[in-house]
Structures are given as C-alpha cells and as structure tokens.
Image 1 (tube, rainbow, N blue to C red):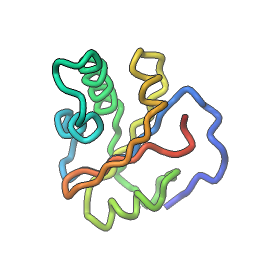
Image 2: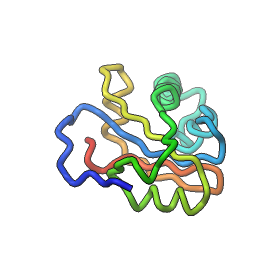
Image 3: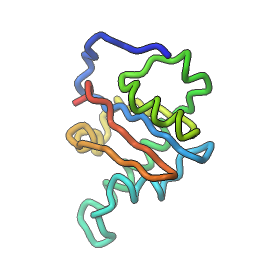
Amino acid sequence: MKIRNSFVSNSSSSSFIIGSRDNYIDDEKLFKAIFKDISEDSNLYHLARAATQKISEYAEKIDNPKEHWFETPDICEKILKKEMNIFEANLDDYSPWRYALCQMEVHYEDDELIIEKCKNYK
C-alpha cells in the first residue's frame, strides 16, 4: 500500500474513503450514515440528498488497494480486515453542496459501511 506523506494543497475539495460490502455505493445507506439527523421536512434535505448522490457518483472502486496510495491508511487497513470493497471519492467541483461537505467531519462505521473524510481536505 502506498501512502501519501505530502500536504494536499487543494483546499476546495473533499475526499472520502468508503468501505462497502456491496460492489457499489448505495445512496440510501450513504445518506443515512452521513445525514442521519436530516428529515424530509428540513430545509437542508435536498442539499444533503444532492451531496450524497455526488459522493456516490464520484466514488471509484479501488481494485488493487495494496498498490494505491491512501491518506488514511489506518481506515483502509480496517476496511480490508473487514473484507469490504474500498472506494475513494474525490470531490473538487464548485457545486453548492461542496462547501458544506468541506466543513463537515465525517466518521461512520457499521458492519456494512465505513466512511471517513480524509483529514488533509478542508
């Protein structure tokens, strides 16, 4: 496994490492994991749904994780030990939801899904 040691200078992006039992990212599971406190009657509901969809859309499955660099190798090791698929989602466009994701702390783990926002992105 390759590990990036340098500082990431793109301060307008968010990067997520996702472990999933599925071979794809389930939007509904992702939404419930990241935005569990946002109800349908919330003013933020549609923004949260759009953000979830973008994370899912940008997520790329890492087929050879031992040959890939990761900013959060401890999370990746945990995902591999649980025999989950590893996905990486790098979000760097200027959509309305991007700013909110950049400001959030995201840490989630259950038996089906692990989500971690990389620490070097703000």
